[in-house]
Image 1 (cartoon, one colour):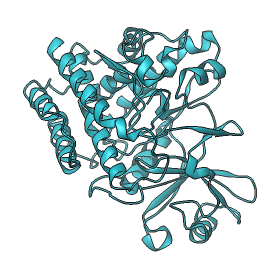
Image 2 (cartoon, helix red, strand yellow):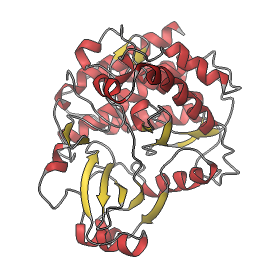
Image 3 (cartoon, rainbow, N blue to C red):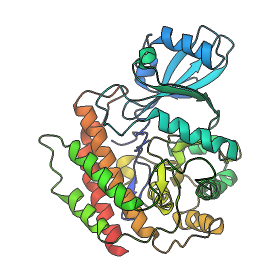
Image 4 (spheres, rainbow, N blue to C red):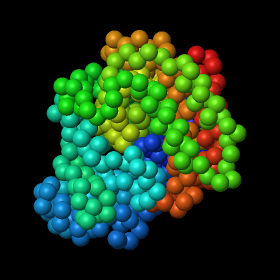
Length: 391
């Protein structure tokens, strides 16, 4: 798995207190190939028709609903193990981003395009950095599943150390952690009722609900012949027995990390991406996940899993990222280690789902290195256990 970058929920580098870049849930981009400087999946480079897109129907819908000019070309730029994201360019060279669910093996409550569109539509007018939503299609006759279209936000999405070194100088890299933490605090300050998101989910019991959800999905995604020795279940029980008191009801992204953001040339967040598992709940869960992903150069498994962008010289450490969040939030972060442990455990459950879809032949993107996922699932669960016991 060395050097592989795995999007949405998971590109990972971990240590006993941190996963560096295991990409989710969002698992979003893996085995990156490049053309013209733009990262593309292998399936995006295949001849038309592009997998997951009925080009005639979608082009017609975009012309009628989002002001596109025919013809429209599509490229798959992220996905296969989670929701699929495409870059669509029309005859006037206007660029759009289109999101749709994976091709098959979809759990009933997952991959909800209406939910994603609802969230960014509520946040965009408030100045939270998200792509401008342009249109939602729920007519499955158009493209088999619902999809939505938003603006295509240009900028840097950092997935590995070399890219961070190429895109930003030392001084700018020094600022990225503060920008990311500040943006997260801004998201958590949103008045969920005032934003029209009060009905998105229950306001209480977030961690309890999350533990039930991810454990249920883990159990639904078991793979014959793959046994993790009961560690997922054991750590889930430990987490359930020591849940901190929720301090605030906030919009929780659920997979907030560096490579789920688009950065401008100053290292500031232009857009937060991948709202697939967004809900309402405990904001410190987002902070824990961010710290899980924020790799440091001395993390024990960097050599095994590949260098995350935050291992580049200039990036501040986790403690500085945490302090940046504290400076912009009135929340008590003394229990943040619990939320880091929860983040590791959740990532293990997510990765199990990705692995199950891979084994079922239901992913549309590069499938390289997925066979090694069981090892990393067990490593994540063990890291969660150790982090929790140090809490």
